[in-house]
Image 1: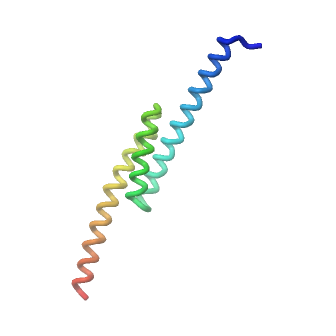
Image 2: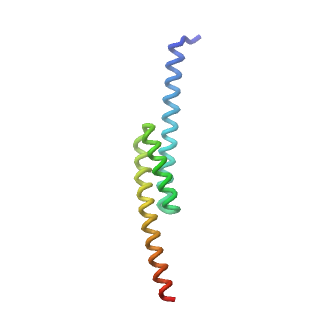
Image 3: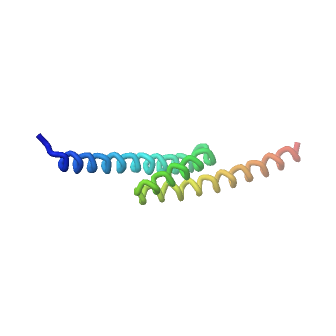
Length: 97
């Protein structure tokens, strides 16, 4: 039979493992959304990558969370650039009709 000190230590270790797994999930999700956002749906994926990256950073998972956060910012910038270029080409095309 375990005494209270052993149960408390085991409970603390289990909590730390659960927090680590949760922060890794946020970080990996942020990184994946950042990578997907480069090709598809830049702005929505970028926004979600930034949000999940911040959650991952808050829960002590720095590397992948930071990468996802930076990719999220790049996604938003690229999405704005893509939209602007598309708008310019549309205007040029409409003027030539």
